[in-house]
Length: 88
Image (tube, rainbow, N blue to C red; front, side, top):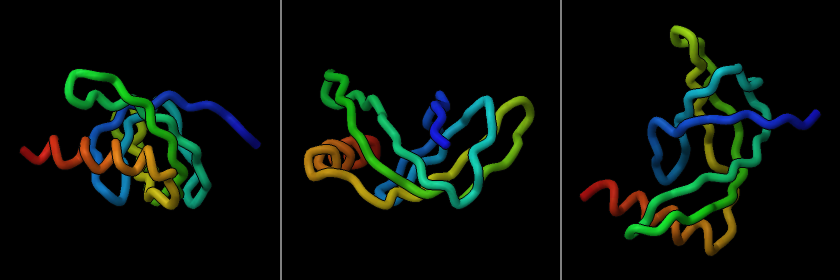
């Protein structure tokens, strides 16, 4: 079963993403993500796959934790640069 869920990233790290959604995601399910990251003034789209490791109701939203399991080389480079930029 495939579905689209819009999410806003609340926290990013090298290993995963914490998102806020309007609907739950099934725990331990595999997800395909496309994220738009602003890097050096340019929006860059990256693609990756992950596993839902957390899905908790918080008020009207859901907090969904996703452990990244795969990412192509170009996306990994952009993602790593974005994470480094956020730390400074």
